[in-house]
Image 1 (spheres, helix red, strand yellow):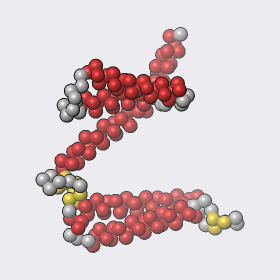
Image 2 (cartoon, rainbow, N blue to C red):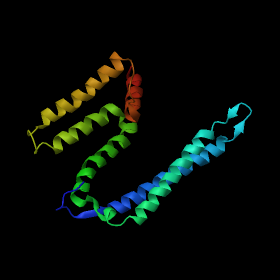
Image 3 (cartoon, rainbow, N blue to C red):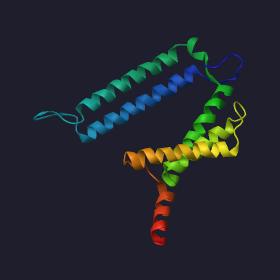
Image 4 (cartoon, rainbow, N blue to C red):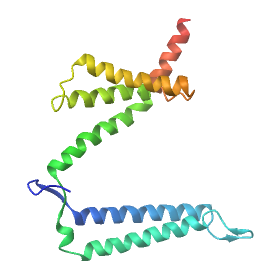
Length: 176
């Protein structure tokens, strides 16, 4: 995944172990949920949790198998999974996405999307065409406006406007 000049951040072994533990825990959660809703055999056949229980059991068993393999295989799993430079590049996209999703319940999808698009256009303006503030504002606000027109007006499926949108609606109603 990363090039040879990149400083190693994490070895493949630790990613394999972490993923095996995560999927084993996920299988355990499915099994516990299946037991809570009933996983036996009733008068009319299997109860609601019967098949999910066995799916969770298979997932957990396969995960334990992967964990054992990750612990036993030595040379192949000592290779670098990701380097520091590559991980910084992933975080440069992942962190804004997390902020975007976190902001949506408060700002609504339209404002959050406009800011998200504007951020990436402004951040990457040195790598390609140098966008000025008017171009960034026009494209990001235009995309949000197009989303509103398409979904809310054309398809009649309004997207979440968030707390700010709710406050604006209340304030707009108070002004009438």
